[in-house]
Length: 388
Image (cartoon, rainbow, N blue to C red; front, side, top):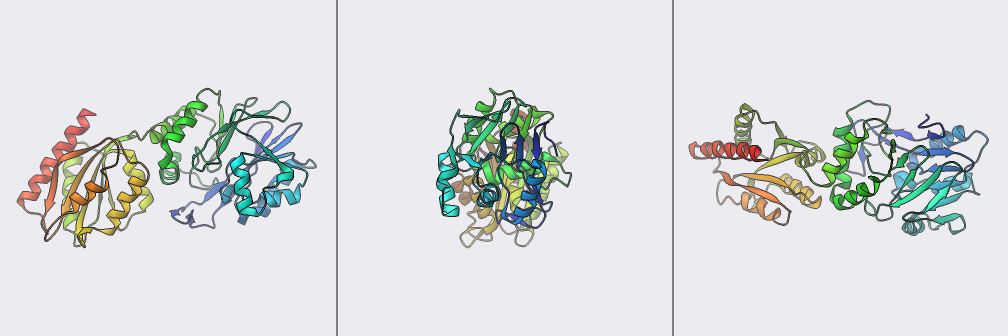
């Protein structure tokens, strides 16, 4: 597949794995992207997962014909992109590996060698001429590993963005980009918003017409749409006006409160998403928490703490620098309810959170008092939306 006249796609689709990075459900698989630039000198852009060594090397051979590559550019050292460096050099021993200094340290850790005789170290602003195509390297530390670089090719105006602008899903299945790109970004890169913002500022000075990520489709049209979403996600700015209600319920009484609140909000025209944390894909729940501008956390006091799935959910939020949202609480307890206090304390170090004045307190089951609190909380959330 041609990306431009001189740049070919040589990546692979993975429908074998059920979990990416051992935790993210990938029902539509994942793509490991690799590219080759054919010029006076030939550069291969990254390798793929170890399970797809033969397919990738065959794709490369088919793209090259009788030619041989001069360089392997390693943007990122996660094994799903770097696992076949040694195999590449066995096939093409004269080629040079081009990467950051930290990458070569990681290669020693992964492979027992830093390939010193074949290495070219590059950093911020360094260039590599292939002929009419010239690669300029841009440091992208902690997006989302410390060794990461991206590269820009000025002739065809292509940004090779490493894991930036990646998404779950193999390329042989069509699906909405934003949903799985958001889940990928929030889950994997979400902690490093400041570093992504820094990279976006660098990229803003470049004339980019094509973005080639290491996962997901090559982006060629309407790039402003994708860049705007990345700017929202990495600045922790709500993407959608609406309310996420994340809950756990032991005997159904907390769920009844959640459904009542949702009904009132929806009648008022609010967009509402409800997730049962005991049954949902946790990564999708976390994704929605970063998508909407308001969130309601509803759970029970459990073992003098909170229900385990809620604790896990909040840990995911705080780990990823959750901020810039309105947060409300519904707590339930048959005696000594403390869930709201516990949840709020878990969020106390998050930046720029506005907590609702009303906390719904359920003592075992809904009664007239807690139903009235739900009505008051709904009005408060609706009024908060009007202020945004």
